[in-house]
Length: 111
Image 1: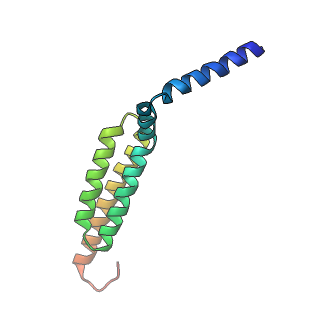
Image 2: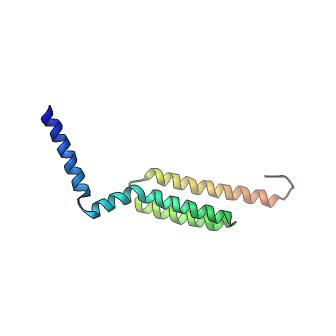
Image 3: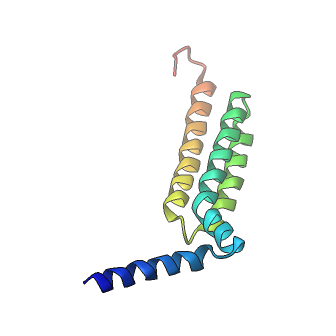
């Protein structure tokens, strides 16, 4: 029993060593884990800043381009983040349409 546990621990150590043995392996692992989250966070901050400057169309363009880049580069590893990004685009478009309709009515009612 002790021999098999020791063998399993040694196999785990060897596999981790092989993964992070080179700087390329460590860099690839880091990019696969953190890349899309950082890309989406940056695009979210840029979009919010642009929205506050009343440039909604530009904000949607920036978010769409950033999301497309994140999805194309890491779709196989981060399907969940890709779905979140697409949902963000759809909600932004719906929000833009609703505010556009609301401001064009000019009936005196608050939207």
